[in-house]
Image (cartoon, rainbow, N blue to C red; front, side, top):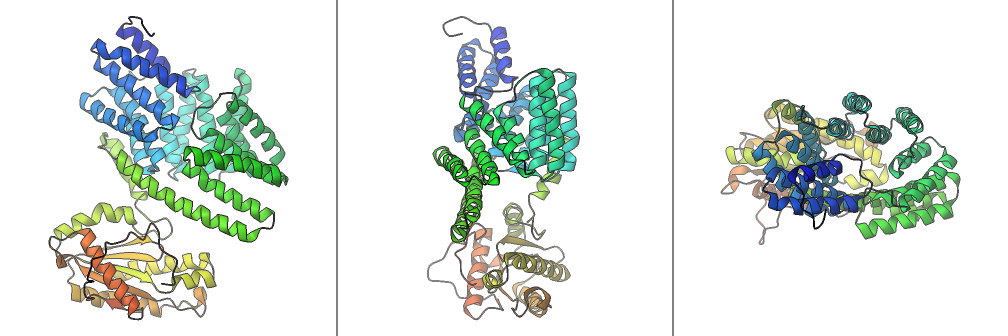
Length: 539
């Protein structure tokens, strides 16, 4: 198209050919989309220009330029919302869902996917009718709601067959099989993978590397290691030949090959494959894949009897995972924008968003809920009391007994805190901040009364029958309390900092107590979010 005069209608048709395809050449399609945007700019068609820019940004996201692409996508999200074109809005919601996926924000991803499907109407292309339903099914499945996801996968499969979207049907079946696999549903995963193999045979086309990786991973989980090795070597061969559409493909494929080779007992080749995956992760900053590389390395060390090295690699995996969570939160902050939703989409999104605001171990509210809800509560209730509670010597329980025992202690302590608080402050809530640290919120409760209530809860925990769980090891808790009205104006950081200071005072005074009146430090210490990390200590 370079150097030629092209009409808006011709550009629109060329653009739709890029928009509505299973991408196999990201860089080539990105160059095409950028050129269409350049040619569309002087034509005075803002919708065509927005489509071209969105297509380019979506491809840029897939190429690995996440920060730039995310900024562009969310700028186009705002433009599409203001101008009201349903097809563009649906496409931009899918792009936002993909950006949220890379940011690790499953709730936002689900919200955008719901909105995209709700916006489908008679103007949507056949490709959109299938692919948007697929993205919603994926978002549901990866949000631990596979029962809700399966009907949408079936709808996507049926739509692909009815609309003769044969290449897209292979993507539907591949992604469905993979998400069943991720959820531990290996029998269901194999059933869907068999339909994928049958579809490829009937239609006479070769499976792409992504589909082969899905099949190889399923074979590994089912103990079919020799088949998995053959599958993955073919997968890597096709990927090296250019059949790749994501920045992290080869790192993923080498990791799956390493798992297959370990299952065969070929630890030398498994290590070589894993070393290649690790190098790619480091070069491309593939933090999520790197966590799994560390875990596979631990398995290889253990298979060779190198147990100290395996333990060290497990620790490295934990650290890498914690760092990943930090990076995801930073990325989420960059991508957070206003969400355009219909009434039905908002209802569904709120239900799944609520899942994202609970701690999976204890069922309590989590730090995300605290950050979203507590600032308004503090601003509107000067009599609100807040406490940070921290289990005493919890590291001793983990180290002496086991982390499973530690989890049981956390679950029972959470129940005792929740029950105790409900009796004295039914409008309040308990949240887990991370590790062995909890937050208790007591609305309309003056400081003196709060101290009395919390001390009763402390005694209940200390007097609980722990013998069946921890044996001779006691379970006690230290609590630092603060009143929202102690600072002017009341704020969450200031109130947390006061409670944190009082918690440290309780620890320093011998633990197993409630403190609300520790003197201020000479220099104020900013409250640390210990849900991210905490130095190993016997607290």
